[in-house]
Image (cartoon, rainbow, N blue to C red; front, side, top):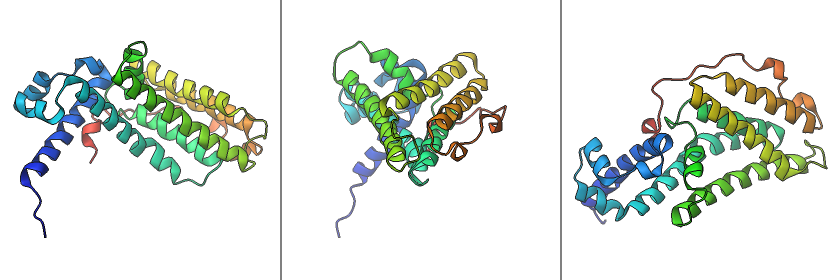
Length: 230
């Protein structure tokens, strides 16, 4: 049996440690705030060691986008997929996203809300990676909606891309308002709006919680961050 190379294992651990820090920084300050020197100082690593893991600032940024995508799937997409396809899964997907923002999985709220604004008009590989992540998320929401429509749980004439656009807009607005004002009321407002919209689109409105049943307050953990993920 081949023995694992200890250097490779140490390198993988260091890479994971660096990326756990980079997603936090980028979510609050943007991808341009990442630098080998800063990471080496904060994580008590050598600059040459950090540089060897990524090779360039651009690759560090790309790796950070990939790591943020992985965490997003882990915290939003995977839990929602445990609910059977249909309106219930769609509602759960929206709830998981709002929880992901509210619980500050990333200190700056939604990682992609920050970096999309940073790179939306800047061509290049990082822009393309961010755009792909945004398209993948939108595409996933659209697939969940289409499943619910095809199961007969949403009206047959439901405009899938339009509904996805509306739901994502409500979630992102809640994220932006909450981060800006350091409050949680926006998450309740988004839940009420999403519940109202889905009850209108559903063939059985009772399959979606009544807006009046949404809790009036939510607490935000003060220390939650991507660093706590395995």
